[in-house]
Length: 309
Image (cartoon, rainbow, N blue to C red):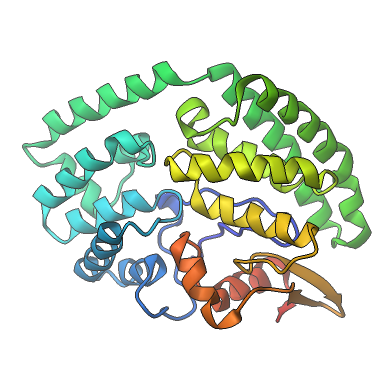
């Protein structure tokens, strides 16, 4: 089963990386080892290797895709090191990137083992306290509004994909324009809706609205500056920031930096749009939690049923 957290062409939603999708495999291991190398090891039930790779990346401060922190806990626990897994939970609680509901309920070998550990009740108490703290800081109405807007966006996007793309993308314009106008007003009043304020899913929805606002490149550039600050503070996903960076650069007539955007070249072919130094592209992608370009191309080809160059 392949993880479908596709992040571009031309505007597909970055689906949340959860453990429902963590049996995926990338198309070949990247060098040096990346999150996706660890994901392969997890799919092969080599939990110790998965834990070792992710632990090293965590120490280096290299970001994981959304939900990846839970895989670190899962692999470490499944490898038998419950003490280290509990230590990761404690260290990650305040970050807002550890999906606490999944931590408490997802059925996976490592998580199941942790819940059977005598130390679990005390850890669970801390998790519940952190959930309450996060909930108290959130703007629940804004989060719900963002999720509703995202749902409309996705309905329009998927309808265009089902219609074969091309001119069908024009049908998405009214939704994208209405969402952008609304979000622009929200930002003017409240600032950027980061993870602390609207949760991981709400922040993802805000990014998606901006990502699809190609009709308003000035707004995209404004939002990118806000997202960059939020990402530095741990309040936005670095991969989302990278995707928006590419949109903004291309709109300014410059090469993209992270290789996330493709163009329809006709005859059933998609091509990578102009990109900075290709020799170091995978290193830049790895630094923001994106998979290697070849793996990304393979997933785009699977999703759209087209050749990807």
